[in-house]
Length: 180
Image (cartoon, rainbow, N blue to C red; front, side):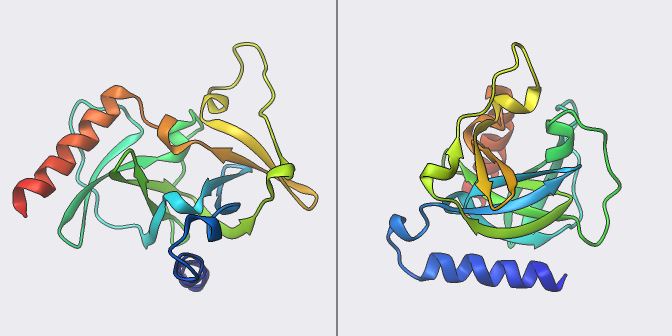
């Protein structure tokens, strides 16, 4: 978990460098899912936490794993691999939760492994390829970032959850507001 601590430090430094949005522009938190690397704009990332006890929510999509209590706030968590219709994986000590903001709501993304914080210049971001009906992941990917010889699939967090999922998130956030 040393690398998670190091990445937390990088995120905090990146955010603390300036409150201005410009310092976060072009920075992405990357993580591994199956054999692919994905990136989330650092401005969406609140924090990275270790996997913790998850309370299941009945009658929700299989990729919505449930709710966690993060310092008194109830946050829904989504398993990224299941969301991308990849086979499930067994959680281990590298598995963690990236807490992000989606449409003013906090959501946790369970990821296999955090990679790094990278800077990707706008000229190194290409539109995603279209493969007809194609891959379900492509509807969440807004660009492909070139980093050296590698590529990172850049996610649009607003598209990770559909309207029904958002109502679950809103209900969890209402619980937080009612308790305050």
